[in-house]
Amino acid sequence: MGKPRVPVKIVDWSEIVEWSRGLAARILESGWRPDLIVAVARGGFVPARLLCDFLDITDLLSVQSQHWVEAAKAAEKAILKYPYKVDASGRNVLVVDDIVDTGETLALAKRFIEREWGPREVRTAALQWISSVAKFKPDYYYIEVRDWTWFQYPWTRLEDLQQFIARIFREDERARGRILGEDELESLFREWYGVAPADFGDYWKLALDRLVEKGILERVNGGLKLLKR
Ligand code: AMP
Image 1 (cartoon, helix red, strand yellow):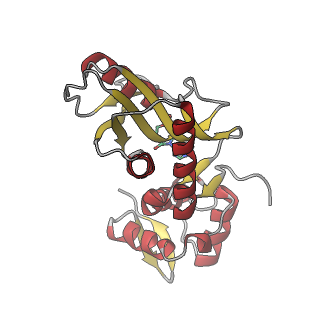
Image 2 (image 1 turned 60 degrees about the vertical axis):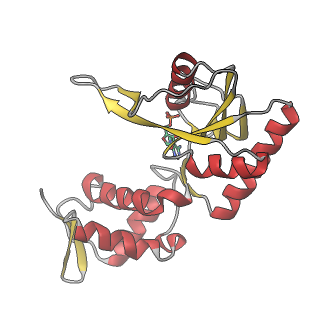
């Protein structure tokens, strides 16, 4: 099999706990202690909650970032969805996300908190940092990724899987406008993503059912087809 179009690595819960514990150890080693943790929604939630546990921290808030496609512009820009204000004066704030890819999200959250919340200091942390593409390096990270990969975290299993499947039906010449049998879909999936449907366990069936419920796919003659909308 050749190189997948979108290289995917499935991350399981035990790795998340291990990576979060490792990240907490890096923060402890640095001697700096946060008073408040801010999770960047939605990817930062689980790592931030685990960091609270490993670092003995009770104060946890969240800001939500959203990628906004500016009218008539191809580029996507990150914005904060609910830019509320908090008095964080005199406090050390740690902003946490799952991964730094372009780095836009974490950089934006850091700037916003520095400007609007008046903290003593803001530092950033992520489980993973894609050093070959990121414009921003977090103060703390656990894993440095060199070759770009889509990390399929356990909290977006169903969401990602639906997108992966729909993408094949929309973009692959061999799938567009056709009915795909289960075996055909499985082999295209492996080719596209370098992982197998079986690696997703029960989620595979859940994702197909959800795509059918939403009217994105339809079942025809024992196969699946993209529904035109
Ligand atoms: P960024 O491009 O750094 O602003 O990333 C924005 C958000 O998109 C991250 O916090 C992740 O939740 C998600 N994300 C971006 N790149 C990846 C990737 N390679 N694997 C998994 N999730 C990603």
